Length: 290
Image 1 (cartoon, rainbow, N blue to C red):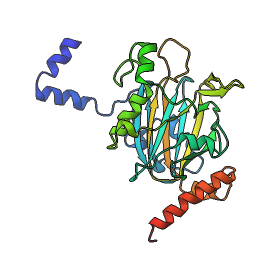
Image 2 (cartoon, rainbow, N blue to C red):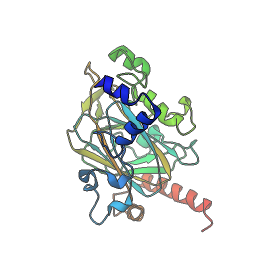
Image 3 (spheres, rainbow, N blue to C red):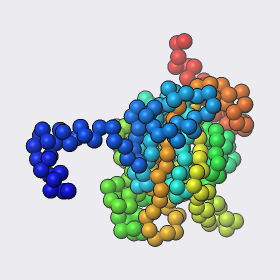
């Protein structure tokens, strides 16, 4: 088989024929372009009344891989831990103003809640609301311990570079940042979904693991933003093997949800969440001539 492929691709014409023969084929994990070509089971996750024409992003992200996507204000993003062993590390940058980015410390401190769940605001370092967790069936997330590092993965798994068999989260997030013209120093601490932790009374952090297969979390973006995701091991995962499962991503235009969030009918807004929302809307109004 290898000899046959080498023969068929030994010339430019043969390589072109081989490449064109791959058109239309799908893999278990991939980005679906156009997004409406995603598998039926993904599109069926859209809310009632939302058609596939509103889908802007559909992807199955393998464990050990990263993805990056610029998304418009009013986009709703659904992440599903299909196999029950994903761990998705996320950072957000404001589109067109990447110096403003997710601030995990304020995301925990300002709403007085260390454990993200439905209704939790994701705040920027300028005190603005970047996104809100508007649905969650997992309850196993982490805004305290960050992601894995090159040194840590090398010590535990024997390698940690982005293209190794056990890539560290920070290395993958850095690749996503580089694609936005940023540098390694521009990668802030991340929040992770689908692997939870709890702080014990003595101050130690206990790893909770996953909520199981099929758990989902949904984010509503308040700003035009670039979302960078890395599906890789949690830094407190005690298993000696680098192991995990894919995550499915689906995003659609949901600007009506911005109004529902503002009037409190989508999720309950605490006073700190409301202030961050007002900060964002004030900034957007000041920038608009409309």
